[in-house]
Amino acid sequence: MAGGTTRAAHLDLAPVARAAGTVALPGSKSISNRALLLAALAEGATELVGLLESDDTERMLEALRALGVAWTRRAPGDYLVQGVGGAFPVKAAELFLGNAGTAFRPLTAVLALCGGTYRLSGTPRMHERPIGDLVAALRALGGELRYLGRDGFPPLEIRSARPRLADTAAVRGDVSSQFLSAALMALPLAEQRVAVTVAGELVSKPYVALTLDLMERFGVKMERQGWARFGVPPGARYRSPGRLHVEGDASSASYFLAAGAIGGGPVRVEGVGAASTQGDVRFVEVLRSMGAQVGLGDHWIEVRGAPPLRALDADLNHIPDAAMTAAVLALFADGPSTIRNVANWRVKETDRLAAMATELRKVGATVEEGADRLRIVPPAQLQPATIDTYDDHRMAMCFSLVALGGVAVRINDPQCVRKTFPDYFREFARLVRGPA
Image 1 (cartoon, helix red, strand yellow):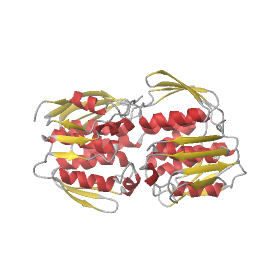
Image 2 (cartoon, helix red, strand yellow):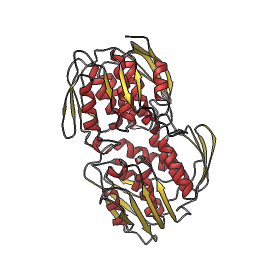
Image 3 (cartoon, one colour):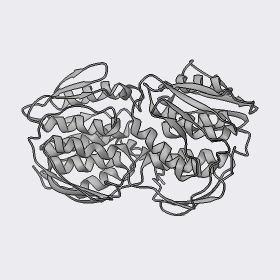
Image 4 (tube, one colour):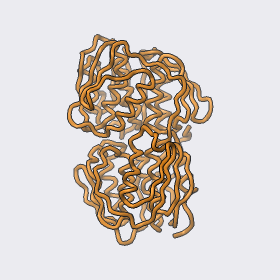
């Protein structure tokens, strides 16, 4: 796992001319934390193979152990989780969950239906990330949740005696799909027929589809009406599938695939491909639309290309994480690009709309920041820059690609990548070649 507390102040990336090679991806963060939670709640033991080892999964593993779940690390990425077959046995706990939204939101929902008293907290940034829509839905079901700081935001106290729940509750869908995913994963603990409806337009639908797929692999197939209503069938219980392989992280793949598009390639990523259940595999559509050559197998993707790429104008609400990589690719385009319908960037690890606009301007781009979009005019010549990362792993990884434009880049706080990809810069260095 990612260890230690010392963080380097910065990392200097020299100008580079091309990128080529193969990368074996770490496990998907979204799948890893969902699979850990479902394995913990299931009847029976589950072997999770290819699990991501990072800060976010550390927080989930620590929380599960504190809640009475036994797990064993048998080898890197190989964990055996002994499921508790329902509600957690520990009925009082204080949990620190860092800035891991994929741990904080689902655990909030599950603990609200477990019976017990729990306190959940995180980093200062986590305490700025809204959770009010999820809390409102859980209260409507019958959960007892109290804000310990500002209304609508963590930290939280959860007190529940597992009363009979309401039959239905509504979850807003236009802020974060994690709210709906969290509620859905908790519903089988209700031990009665309960439904969740979606209020408003649901953002990031592929992440909800991923949640539903994993729930089904653990024995619970939700009843649904499109993206508007989801119900848990009578008698639904999580049951271990025995062994589950965590596919590579499609969001992390985007940086290396983009490097292939900018730096010649071929760059191949292994562990994710046409058979992926992750929405961010659709980043290949962005690459193709910008003129890159893409090869695709069930479990691999390969990209070749060279600037100038074609300018992009696209709604990328369905791939919000990989959309950040597209914004950096816009620096290498033949004209202005517009990334649309990404308002939910503002409630991520940082306000990503503001952060991306600020850092893109540093390297010479002209950027117009809208409420839910960025318009990026690439510079005639990229400028060397010091990039602030805002304790956001994706900011650090995205802006490493600027070095392929033939300029030096300093990445402040590079170890923020420990959140999802501790070895990112080592893998990036393996791929890039020579001075520009």
